[in-house]
Length: 116
Length: 112
Image 1 (tube, each protein chain N blue to C red):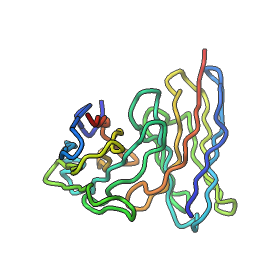
Image 2: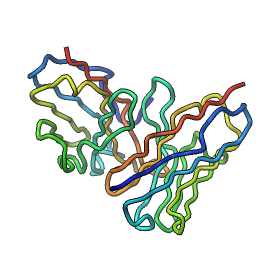
Image 3: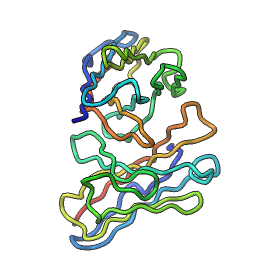
Image 4: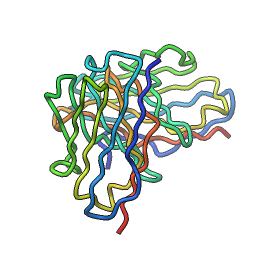
């Protein structure tokens, strides 16, 4: 069974940092690309970052470019999102999502709250 | 403002048929990129409902169907049921954007 489990969320002050993790199981992790998608309270889905199976290429949405870094460890079956210089508008539920044609499996989501 | 345009809300009575539109442009759906649809039940993560325009993943009821024509796509739900009440998102790719992945703004389906 495919499972994606996010962790590392929580409350952080404006300007602070947080590192999200996504632990994968039930499939060959290195064979898939992944995305981070977020959802602000009461809002729609916003794609923020993509990483291929080999970690190249990597893409970011303009809203997070230069502040967030996506990475993966294929030996640990894990995906990461390092978030720096956090802003109020980064408050959201963050999802990791496996990509195969579509985003076929999603984690349960983890809440990040940025407070001033 | 989302790259793909969906109606904010639709509604229908149990047993009825509803459709949700997803309008794109020549740099995304109109360029030939596939459209995928996700269902998000309240308080849960999105779930893949339709991929590659028309294909239902295993376990998705045949009441759900997708179509694509030119720069637009649609999701149809027939025999509406109370448990279909959810938000629905279309997703495609856009050649003008780094990373490509774009979502519609989402449509809230209310079952009357």
